[in-house]
Length: 287
Ligand code: ADP
Ligand code: MG
Image 1 (cartoon, rainbow, N blue to C red):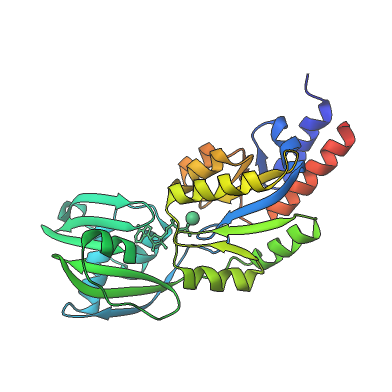
Image 2: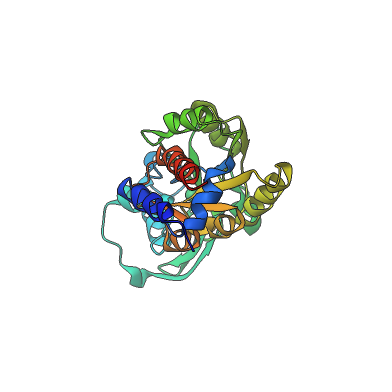
């Protein structure tokens, strides 16, 4: 039978906006010594501001329209930001053949014209030569009708408690904090530096994130546990692979919430250390 104080632990956690799906997770959480994060939506707000549109032949407005339309069925934070920047209602009848390539971007037909919106990997995959961009921020390269048309630059901002969340984990004796992201090395390194995360891996596809977590699982001892914190559809496989999966509940995708063992209802990264502390306290009472 499950000790009563486990229920008290789960109840106490849920009062703090930390939803624990089973009492066994409290025990694992209490033993966590590696905390691995996704970047976008977890440590950063995932609400980007469009900070520049650099075009070749097509106007800024038209390029943004193509991007917003091509992205109309994506739930990625990048898509949401583009919709917001475009600011007009989308006529979905204009968009066909939508394909989202996870960790890369999207391709679609807008008014029958092929549009690709995504990172350098997507352009390479499509065999489109693109111009390197040296601005700081996330770059969405745009190809229209098979031709490179420029890029849209967006910048993400750190969540209010992101830095504090990492500091708190260190204070709580967490051995290792690692950030994994599909975003570019430049953006990833900058964010990691701002947060005080020592280990960062960038330009990862969803499957690469799983392999990285597997590598990290091998590095630690059996009784030390690894927690992964993420928000996206892409993160579901890693959330399941980690000893404990923690999802962001408000911004997070349904797939992430489903795959997770613990859900942070208000998306506050500071709740990660809080959850660990609650779990430790609870285990201490039980044993
Ligand atoms: P993270 O690991 O930081 O949460 P993702 O794995 O979701 O990021 O995405 C990685 C990268 O793939 C993004 O930084 C972006 O360059 C590209 N990307 C993914 N989805 C989209 C999309 N819908 N539109 C444009 N680019 C995208
Ligand atoms: Mg993410």
